[in-house]
Length: 104
Image (cartoon, rainbow, N blue to C red; front, side, top):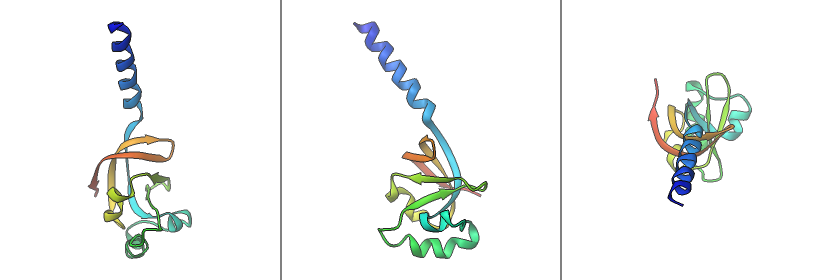
């Protein structure tokens, strides 16, 4: 029984590590991101839009990928800034955030 439990824990740990990763890009609102508006030149607009709670924040990478972010409270304070987010990433969604750091 101990052997099976140990195997199960190891399998789940490896599976969790497979989805851990990072994404670097600008924090902007979802509406502007889908319209192709993001980056340093869009920082002021992103800050204004993300002040309201009904607008979702996303990460837009330099190559135009848009990542949805589940934990809005951890990302909205970085509106308009370029950041690196470490966390659980699957497909184009960041389901949990371990850390957010300003990127250059």
